[in-house]
Image 1 (cartoon, rainbow, N blue to C red):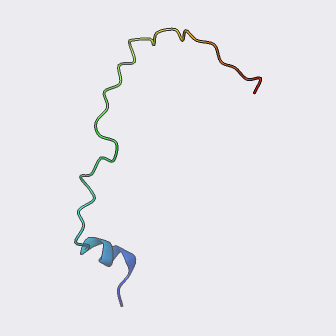
Image 2: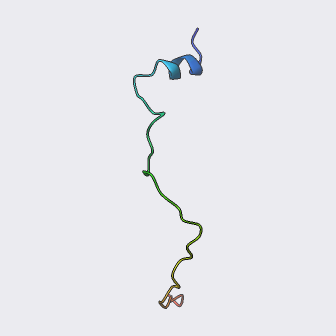
Image 3: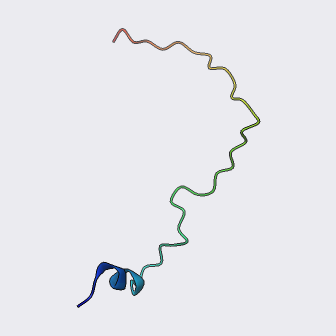
Length: 43
């Protein structure tokens, strides 16, 4: 009998190295620019 761990190990698809949204570098020392725009919620 096979369990899910066995099937995952022999899977033909390599998924351990995939980064779905790529590499993002987050600089916590830099604050974002102020938002300049009006939001209309009357809609």
